Image (cartoon, rainbow, N blue to C red; front, side):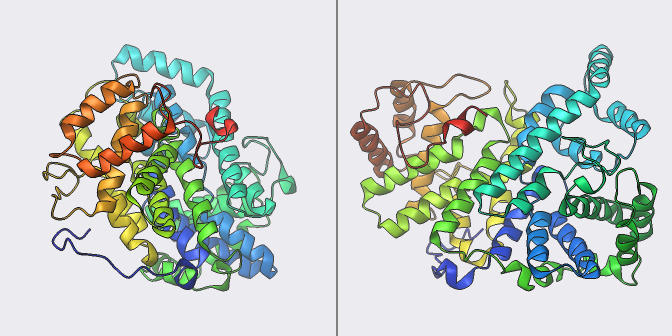
Length: 480
């Protein structure tokens, strides 16, 4: 992030002139890698592997296009079970998910639970937790997978992808022999895209950790149980091809993936579609923790209201709302053991929490047309006196857009429930923000927020949101 030049302001390109859908979603897929605890580029590498297989299968163009986006977005629903994993297994969701991708059988599953359940707990607590999860392991795993798959498929539909893409994501964890989740589908009843995506995922995980031959051997070992036995030879031929591992690790792989016509063979990326994608990813972000449910949507609403009061143009207001929807995307890389902690964080935990704007900036700045947006979104915890984080920017370096988003974020943080306290009423919220005005937050932006609240007739902040508004979640999402 630019810290020395307060006038930094790259050219504001028109999205439809500079963005391809593949480039945009490819960059955002790195956020999905964060919440799955996977190395950077996991979804992109899976996409590349799967598309090599599609070529060998001579898939028709539309099927290749749908497979491309299934592979890229296979983990859309992955944030929705993070809090539950921490609660059930008393562990760090990121390391749990990372290690779970190498489990292939009952024996390995039990060994995995012994290694990854109730880390740091007393022997008695560990024993009790293990007894509970082992007794209900099949049921618990099914619930977690069903939540993730259904949420991911729903978000894919919201992003206008075909039903084939949605079903491909929904059935990612089904196994050829019927032993998978969530429906226990067998054989060819499992969508082809799901079969390819699961194999590509396992291939990437094992290739990265143990090499190409280990990845091929793992697929062969699961042929007929997890995997379609007719597809396994196609995959292993790709994996055993000379230079496969070097290609997979090539820094230019992502450019190659998004240079294909599959990356462009779907909806034009106009302003309306950008809004829909931002809103869809805000659902992924807020699903990470029950205490952030709806947070991005509300911050977007408050940001828009402040922009209205300050006289922003319709175009710039829209841009700001989009940035607010994505401002916490870096939280996907923070463990729920920290996000949901009911007590005070340790210094080490707070240091990890303070990294979320940096992680968010890394994701958003991968998109050329989003680089200014990345700068603004990453500054939502900075203060005018330079005592904020992650960079310690001061008033001379904080643009008005950065100040607007900071005020909106603080207002929602105070007026919504948190793990360590209940939502504060409006009077208490204002008392805290009055003290922050000047040293911490911009007085003009804060006054604009107060004017918007007054104009709304909002009598209390006890429900954590102003009434009505274009970014309010639909009832089905609020009850999820």
